[in-house]
Amino acid sequence: MKIIDTLLKNISQVLLIENKWTGLLILLALTIADWRVGIAALAASAISFYTAPLLAFTEEEISHGLAGFNPVLTTIALTVFLHFHWINLLIIISSIPVTMLIHKALQMLLDRFGLSVYTMPFILTTWLFINTAYSTKFVDTTLTLLPETMKHPEIAGGHFQLLQALLESFTEVFLVSNIISGIIMIIAIWIADRKLLLVTLIGTLLGILLIFGLDVSTSQLNNGLFGYNLVLSLIVIWMLFKQSRYSIAYMAFGVIVTVIMNLSLVTPIAVFGLPILTAPFVITAWIFQLYAEALSRRAAN
Image 1: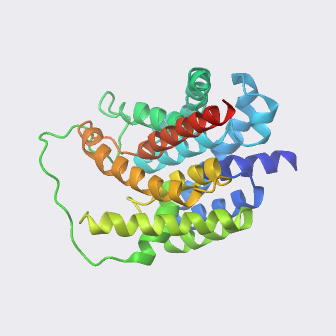
Image 2 (image 1 turned 45 degrees about the vertical axis):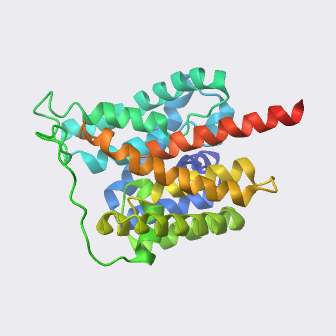
């Protein structure tokens, strides 16, 4: 039973939540959105569970799901971005220990600055593996990694669907788009922490409206591609400042910073043909984590 709990926590920790029921509902949501993604998430969780002790993860890290959430994300990403082929299957499996090695290396480095790794191991490993696509004929990706020319992107119009944009902001954390899955993920967060769900919903909604006001691609906004980094940033900022009397102000500022990060990072990362993934979230989270540490040190003096 302990093993099952850990496998599910590996999935829930993608949303920085340690709750087996949350993990179970997220797994259900992923399977509904794309059965391949559901299988990939569960397989990555299991493999990372048995690999973690060999890669210097402590028993506490393993039991809390901290060793497995990045491999879960990496495996999902490569399942989505790589065409199905037995070579690609081997690549996806091999990405799990690589993600965990990068996790440990980053942890050693970032601990010196009081920073968490968050999803940076997932980002680096995914970029690393999908970039092998043009080095061998056996690896075939759905992405265009070598843009022939850089030009101003076309801003696709269309009708703005607020409810869809909100719900799929939650599912796109796991690189899938599905309204029903979004509802299930919201229920999953509600089970773990109702107040966290409330502030995340409100903050994400405000962020989506702000982005819509900036006249971005409506289709991308509707599909949650501008919202999932908001979801993750708001969860972290709430956990950092929920005891502060200025917590709402920090959340509002977090929305603005995440939106700026998201819009500003798209172009430089697109130069390499790479997906932005959760890079805006990680940078935003580091900024607020360092700020929280600065406040703590000032209060101690």
